[in-house]
Amino acid sequence: MTEHAVRVRGLRKRYGAVAAVDGVDLDIRRGEVFGILGPNGAGKSTTVGILLGHRGRDGGEVAVLGEDPARAGRGWQARIGVVWQDESAAEEMTVAEIVRHFAGYYPRPRDPGEVIALVGLQERAGVRAKHLSGGQRRRLDVALGVIGRPELLLLDEPTTGFDPVARRQFWSLIRALAAEGTTIVLTTHYLEEAEELADRLAVISAGRVRAVGEPATLGGRAQAPARVRWTNADGSSGEIVTATPTAEVAALAARFGGEVPGLRVSRPTLEDVYLRLIGHAGAAGEAGEVAR
Ligand SMILES: Nc1ncnc2c1ncn2[C@@H]1O[C@H](COP(=O)(O)OP(=O)(O)OP(=O)(O)O)[C@@H](O)[C@H]1O
Image (cartoon, rainbow, N blue to C red; front, side, top):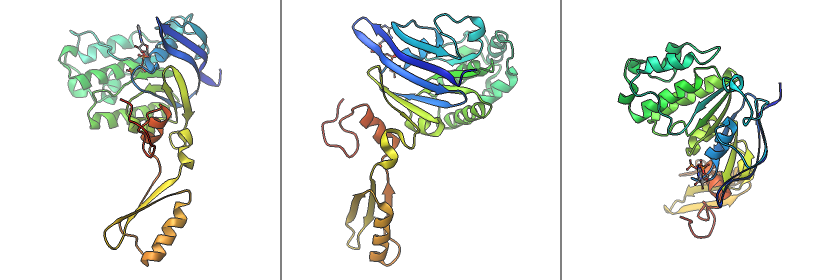
């Protein structure tokens, strides 16, 4: 068994003049939750499509669960779960029928009833797919992605259209699957989701990987200066950007003789780091025009 669930070297894919994927390297370890972030058109779905064997490639090496997706067979496919954008299940069948039907494709499926409950669709089990709301459909897609007890689960923007409660239920589901040892790769535009779920993240823009790392340390985030803000006695705001926030807070506490009014200490958020990595000139704390 190889250490990596996914290993990609020098991956390239062009659509006419567009280099959708332009030399991507990725190592995704077994058992990890790996997030892929990037702006619209960055090449995320193209990359995931190649990992699944849904799309061909123009260059590079790809191994997914030890096999090349371009040549792997049905046995390999059964080890992988997918939640793909714009996937739509059979319209006339009910949720329970569809989940049971898909369970039949796999050698060791989960219990369909359990999976329906896992995605919070138990109240809708008898409803035809065509009568589900957008978010409920996405939950059904997630159910179909996990029904086969996959070793590797690839999710392309899985929580688009989810309400906040459904999103949190989905996060619990992903954590539970990760705890069972499932390797999970997900693309998302929700930075909060990436921060909540991912052990590591890759930021992709214009077909290239700009950074890979843990959410807390990505792009030098942990070493970035902190911003210390407070409110002065006359009501004006004070602010220092410093590499030694603890010392600044201690000095402020001494100056105020105790509690510092309106004290806030902040480091760059994942969004700040993300915007800088994708070259968004309006990223927080940086001068320059906002690219639109
Ligand atoms: N089938 C296709 N034919 C032509 N061009 C394509 C095709 N699929 C993708 N592209 C182009 O390749 C680039 C990468 O697209 P891709 O869908 O991989 O981006 P993405 O990062 O998933 O974006 P989004 O966040 O919008 O889903 C884009 O410029 C897109 O227009």
